[in-house]
Amino acid sequence: MSIRTPLLSLLLAGTALGAQAAEPVLNLYSARHYQTDEALYSDFTKQTGIKINRIEGKEEELLERIKNEGANSPADVLLTVDAARLAQAHDLGLFAPVKSKLLESRIPGYLRTDDWFSFSTRARVIVYNKLDVKPEQVRNYADLALPALKGKFCSRSGSHPYNISLLASVISHEGEPKAEQWAKGLVANFARAPKGGDTDQIKAVAAGECGVTIANSYYVARLMRSTDPADRKVMESVGVIAPDQKGNGTHVNVSGGGMLKHAPNPQAAVKFLEYLASDQAQRYLADGNNEWPVVSSVKTSNPALKALGAFKVDQLPIGQLAMYRTKAQMVFDRAGFR
Image (cartoon, rainbow, N blue to C red; front, side):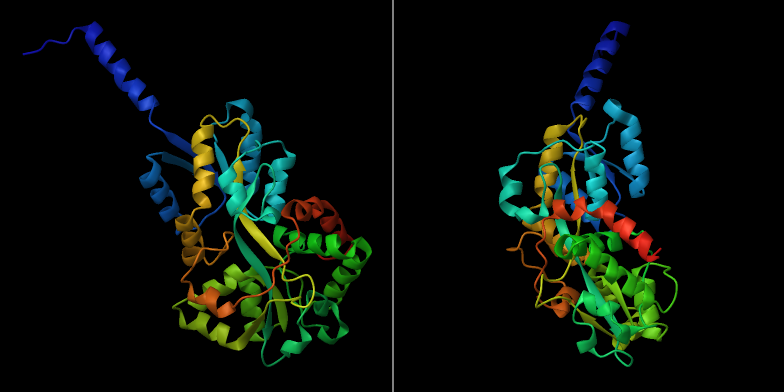
């Protein structure tokens, strides 16, 4: 029979709290809202014993939250999509530089910066109505601004980061005057005012409301793999082209992240970032969420990605792409692409 004195109880409680506090954790702020990512998190915990505490939200909300939390922020890692958003976090001084030989060896140089890394890519492809537009009319992004497609182009908002990043790549390659000329050509070819997301554009093309659009390959692959007969019918009506194969290559955007400046668990943060570059995590991203892996040696089994085929990728450094995002928004505004 044992008797616990108040002092002994306090000592035992303190020991338990100390053990609990020592449990390895990672505090993740994520703007990725994909159910398939659950496999990533559980596999990381299984491999490392590090528990993931996760807060999900919209990109702007999370950036504002981290900024307001300042040095007291519990966040270790920020994950989000689009280079423009990652660059915004960098500009706000939210990221800390990460030195990792593993990340440097596995992630191509054009897909990383000193303080944030790409872990998957999505191509900005051209989707056209097979009955209304011939594939030879839309081999390049530049073709979308030609008078032959007047009244046939539809798009989401010019203020959306996907479109801003694409225009930033045009500015980087062609210069601001030519980029603005292209943007004005797109506006002149509008079938309707910009609205909706990428899936809405693809469905509008299939329905004949417009003849051609630009969409992230992620959305195309999702429709290709859908078991919904309506989605399958949509994909039967459209063709998909990876543009600029004889030029700079198809523009790709990214999903990525970095360690935050005030991360309370920096070692766990680096382990998590390195895990995202592992073969297992790269396969999860590709097979589960229709994104291309950044590690070229990784083999995937995604039938939609296989059907889209191999293509030449624009290897514009991702940091340079992000650098022109403000100019890109100004160009779109001047062109009336809103």
